[in-house]
Image (cartoon, rainbow over all chains, first blue to last red; front, side):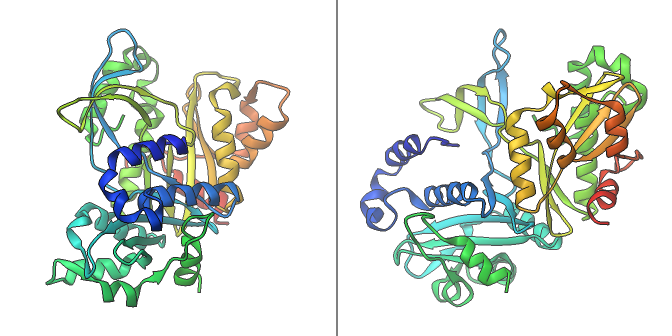
Length: 194
Length: 194
């Protein structure tokens, strides 16, 4: 769902994540990784550093109102066959998925859908920039990982989760600030433009 | 709405556009420009020449089912603040809007929303590839125009429509084939990669 209005987002986030908030209200103010990325994208878009959007969640429309042709009376959220975010940075195509985990030891692969791996492989084939943003909530750390590392891990994995040490070794720690909340384009610079 | 299945698309298109089909069934088989682009994108994606998607139409959800949390009971289609298509080609970010007109003399500017102009200007600022695909149905011709031309025209226009001759002079005629239906990436090559 889109919350173009920040306040509404916060209200919704608070309603949905009441329990979570008690855990992580210090680090990310209860907005979660998605909220942080949306705010950071607004900042990047406004300051013209990049143009990055969250893809809307596709909705399968089953019934429309018979009189008001723009009104949906029955529909369902369906899962994306792609990732959450894409856009343009320095002329390059950029595409990524964001995930968080409360685990202290690893990131469960089950959190990533096969379709997302397929999609990010296609992005890499087209020479786009593909990555994951993974937040380890237990450590209040957010990492950017080149999608190649995650794809290789998922395709060769005997384990069902990516160890924290793998994320630490292969990822780039994303710095936080007031605005942008998470400075992930600095990590993109380090990983993809060096 | 997406019609991943070509046959379904045709059926839906026929139902929705019965009148139109009698006019243009020779040139584009009644599928319209959007159908042609979607089929061409499928072809480009499958043959790994590019990765281009249609953005889903955003839906404003007003009411959810109280029991089934994935079910929407009231929602509205809202208009996009961006364009219809984006993706990656040769590593570059690509973003475009497609429009068709039955006029023989010009393309009415009213067909383009101010938000779309703003969005495409931002894409150009980020060194992305931004363009319009405009179909002149009266001539059965489809042109690719660098968004810069359209933006300049809209911002300086005293006229309320873009003359056919302007489109012909500044645009690149897109060739048609069986697959892809419209070979618009060849026009992208000519206009942006020369």
